[in-house]
Each structure stands twice: as C-alpha cells, then as structure tokens.
Image 1 (cartoon, rainbow, N blue to C red):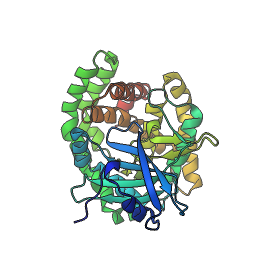
Image 2: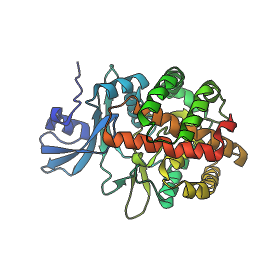
Image 3: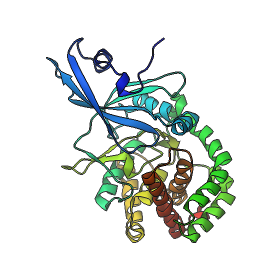
Image 4: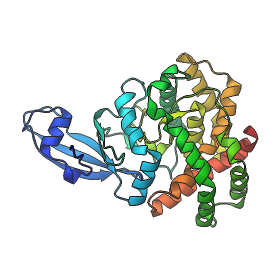
Length: 349
C-alpha cells in the first residue's frame, strides 16, 4: 500500500526526486520552515540542495493540519479533496494565476495528502487584519474574472464530480449554522456591535430562503476569496490565488462581494468604491465572452455579501482556536456585516 508522507519530516530525498521529476541521487538534502497563517492545513517552504540538476531551489508543501478538529472539519467538508482536485483537473486549463503544481496526492481517507507547489517568493501574502488597498482589490478582481469566465454556465461542470460537493456542504450549513451562530454570539458578544447580531438573528431566521435562492448563472468560484488567500507580487502588483480548499460551483459576483466585504477595512472606502469595482469586474467578464446584465450582477453581489459573514461563523467555530484567529474571524464577520447593512442585503432574497 502506498503511504503518503504528510509532514516534511516524513519526506525523503528519493520521494522528492520522484515527485519533482529529478534524477536519482541529484537531491543531496533539504530543509523546511513553516509559512503562512492557514488554520485548515499546514504549509512549509522546502529548501532543496541539488547536485548537478537544475531543480527549483524552493518549493511549498501543503500538508494536513496537526489539529484534530481542523482535520475533522476538512474531511467533513472535503476541503483537502477539493484542493487536490483543482490542481489535478482544472488549474492548468483555467488562466487564473495560481502556483504551479509539482505533485497532488490524497489517500482514500480524504485526510492524508501531499501537495507540492511552486514557491511564489517574493510575492507576499495579504493580511486580513490590516486589510487591502484598492490596487490590491483590483488585482484580485482581475484574477477572479479569469477564474469565472471560462466555464460560465458551462455544460462541462458535470465532467467533474467533485464540483458537486458544494451541494452537500450547503445542507451542512443549513443544519449546523444556527447552532454555530449561538456559539459565535457568545464568543464575540463583547467584540461586535449589537446591530450586527440583530442582522445576524434576522438572517438565521431566513436561512432557508437564503440557501434555496436560485442562481442566475453558475461558474467555478474560489469560495474563500480574500486577501489572506492572495499573494501580491511587489514589482507588478499582480495577485496569485492560493488555498483552493473551497473551490466549487457558485455565483461569480459572490466571490467579489466576499473579497470586497472582508478585505476593505474602512467601510467608507468600501461604500465609495464597491460598485465601480463590481462594474469593472462585469466589464472584464464581458471582454472574455460572458453575457451578464448589470442588474443581475448587482443583485448577485448583494446576496453574496452574506458569504463572508457565514464563513466567519462557520470557520471560527470549527477550526483550531488561536488569538490571531479570534480577531481575524471577528474582522471577517464585522466588515461584511456592515456591508450587508449598507446594501440592505436582507432585501435581496
């Protein structure tokens, strides 16, 4: 039986040579260091020492979380399967910028996996707590349009069975979110304003209406499209999209609402810019052959404003708790909640 090494300590030079397509004996050694702030899995930069082979000096390895709770929720939501499937099936076809993949493997238990990716250094990860400036948002939207356009309302969705996992996850949200929201309120009652919880109470009361609303068009979406999952290149300002553990079928404008709602720290800036940014996104879709009406795009955007709020509740109550994580999820709830209130999002469904 093939055993997948799930930590850098379990890697061998022979295993890395095989997965990187290098000659036997050409890798003389390697070292690793932890990178990133992800709570669903662990990431490492691997430094490779080659002898007579022009291999990469560094790669990134993604591995299962060492936290039991994070692994459990990843298995339940099939997060590891989704990311492996993205790199195996679609990453080479869809022109969104994401790291090159050297190896993607997952065990039948859907938990043990190894993912070897290109190192995007010197690109730097966005900071969810700090927030994003408008050029960063514009760079991210350009990548979102390249992700969404190619398979917009495409019959090829049926070719990839794993894209259907989201329908199961929707039922989990329906079942679990009301209870998780009560725990979320207890945890953040002293951190978030009362009007946010009033909106949240009204939203949970109408959760079925929200989950059952039909989509005008479906396409491939990232599902967690925020600046913590984007790398920004210092020379060009371009963005690379990482962390494909929530990829699936959904509404393209929801990715944009999630990005803008969670990532712009100042609500006044967000209010002043969001519809211009949304219109730019729609124009980029049209330039790539997508037919979308402005009214439909704005309606989907208003509905999508709830996505960041839902993610903050669901993730905060299901992954390993850390001090940074507590504040990050508070921010992830607070910013889109204000967006929902400003957009009168409850009136969109």
